[in-house]
Length: 425
Image (cartoon, rainbow, N blue to C red):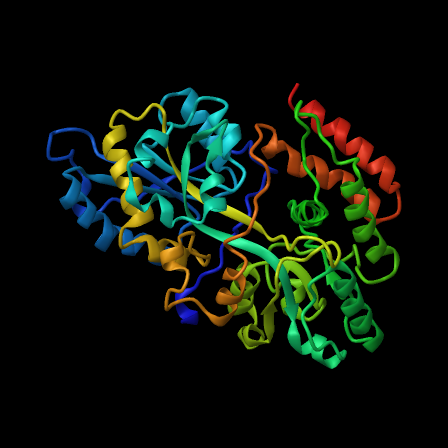
């Protein structure tokens, strides 16, 4: 089982998107010509796939689809890092692939620019629509139109080193913020762990994603009915105060920053508690396999005992270019990829989780995967707003002075609102 899972950068980095993107084509031997009707082949772009996944698609699944649909498929692959820039550039030059992967917060920024085809009329006629987790399907919606279908996801919940918690006398995984902090205090008292809580500080936007989870757990809404940012709300104050206090009280260390290479702090034993998903287990498999069985996933936290358990899903989806010359065959390909026999392989070999109820108990899921999957049905996602690709870096830049005590909670949240409001102007 472990050998079939591969780590990849699940969360999409918004920084550094200005660089050009090189795409490689991986067409099967039979895919060099047009379809059976003499038309051009469909182009399919995957972002960040493993070589094993590319091989499976090229050698097994795409030939099967080509035979079924009577059209060839040209398979392309690319990294995630600069893909958003490439897709927007491709849209401007009318050179987008027919079908392409998009990241967790890409729907609104692309749909608002007219890049994506509305899939709603086609999806409504598909019997398998009800098999998708509703929240994950909703992530492909913008202004009441369905622009993308999910094919794999990671769900962010409480993630723990159970050995370090047990050594500290913590017998049950936290369900609330108070329990989360109390567990961290017990770990700190043992004196073995430098940063009991790790808030995903990295060279990208990890800390923004951790703050987002706390903010949503506190009942926060990013925007009001007029589209104005509302971080300087009671929920924002509650969430940021909780996070900042962990740094002030020595339960977190802002000097521990994950570089993107090697073991993550939780895997390395530098932390015992974090908010993350199966990406942590993938990292352990790659860097410290002996740690995999020491990881445990709890539920999404509640802000307090009376609150709602909230997990946050990062969902990768397939979209069809609005400029596709063969949208009907492109839709057949999306149906095949999200509902056909390859749907297991896409999630498994990406190292993520299924997005359909009928695959939620797949045999390849590890015990940790299944723990995380328990939160999948009620997982939420960050809002679908055209400014989301810019929001992450902007909020990250404001959070960093706050956790260092260089800016107050109130000042930070007020700047957050004004900065995010300016992103859409």
